Each structure stands twice: as C-alpha cells, then as structure tokens.
Length: 83
Image (cartoon, rainbow, N blue to C red; front, side):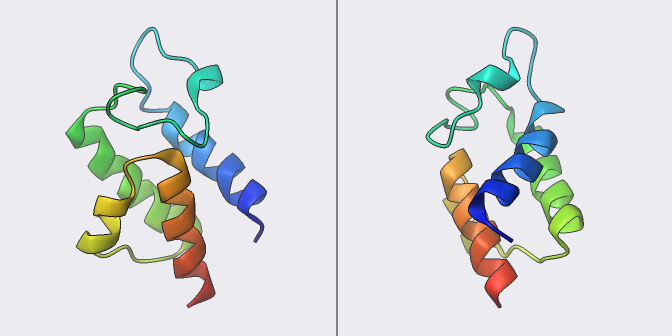
C-alpha cells in the first residue's frame, strides 16, 4: 500500500472525529491532531482503534505516541504494514 493510499484511508477515519469548525481541507500531512485539528484525547483513542481495524494492524503504546501528526500516523501505519 502506498503512502498516498494510507493517507486517503486515514483521512476518512480522521474526518469522522473533526469538531465543528474544522474541515477535511484542514487535514494535511503536517497537521497536529490535537493542536491543529482539535481532536480530543478520547477521540484519539477511537482513531487508533479505527486505524487498527481498517488496516488490520496492532499499534503499541510507544507507536501511539508517535502519532501526533497525520504524517506521524502514516509512518506508524506504513511500518506496521511492512511487518
């Protein structure tokens, strides 16, 4: 799976949790999930669970900490898919 395919799939997951006033146009690779996209910590957990289901991977706690930006999440997903 290419990084572009991962991004597209991840964007579909993230957009469900965007608060009012934040749109999918705000989702960029460098976007910080909590600071720029205003996603709260409870929804971050939901995003991780949705990512695990959508990509059929498991994400450990250390990797979750790397998923602060969209690009960080893409890197973690890509690494898990390679293993």
